[in-house]
Image (cartoon, rainbow, N blue to C red; front, side):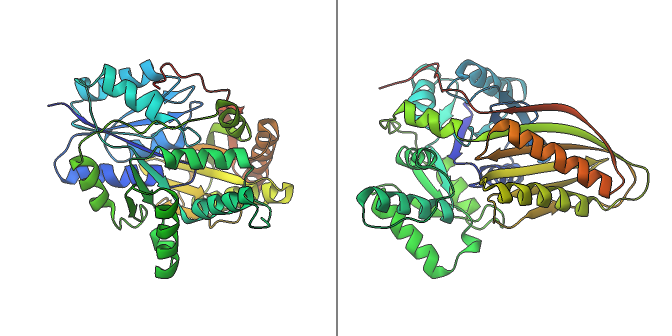
Length: 372
């Protein structure tokens, strides 16, 4: 049987990884064999570790987005299907990536239709991103004096293009919204993107996830909706963000409260970035100690800090991966993160060493294919 391939797009912090983790566990309960494909501009990706915790088969495409690493993406999906026997594949493109319809969806349908049964493209968005788009449109129309935005206009341009090319818009984090706020955001999306179905979910709580799964598993694939994309603006929007992927080994000689350590580390990084006026798109970590795991997540400079997992106070060695996507130069981001790790480890009497680290700004996208 040809495996169903579900791609989940959306900007950094929209909740794609959480949704895919939820979906993988629910699909396994339904009796499916699941394959997950992570994607990033660099290796040492937190998402890959979180995917592995589901028990699904996992591959990673690093060093560029799916559009620029199209042969690598197809090869990885092929391994999940052929080697691991996955009958449902879920892929998460880089969060700052758009133009997927022209550079990924159309090439898959044209060149690999016999290999993969392609589902409609889902694009996640949260309430803050919807409001940012509304402010941008009002600013362009000259109808509103807009306060300082989280990100520059070229970053918001990526938000807009991601939603324009979606087959299904998924408004996430519904659990954080009142009924009135939810209705207002749905109305705003339907007005701006008419004829596109809008679905509301909470990937974190699981609300609406089964309904979304039923939709993407059951809906037939159709010709992807290619949009006009100004690659100069797109490239500038990606380059506006500094990216950091780091791995470290942490060693405690005595019992250590790992949860407090993670909270302090993320809080220190966030506080320093806030003092610099640097807006966080996404900041996440995962700490593994034996068979226990703790994950931390921040999706905005003033967004709540989330910690999930049951990591106790045991002594010994743990591994940590830290990913940051921030509106700041990558060298500054690296300096801030290293200083935060140094000070937090000292406060908890913790030995540490960095085993891998990359900081960068994404280069200009150069797709392998682009269909008109």
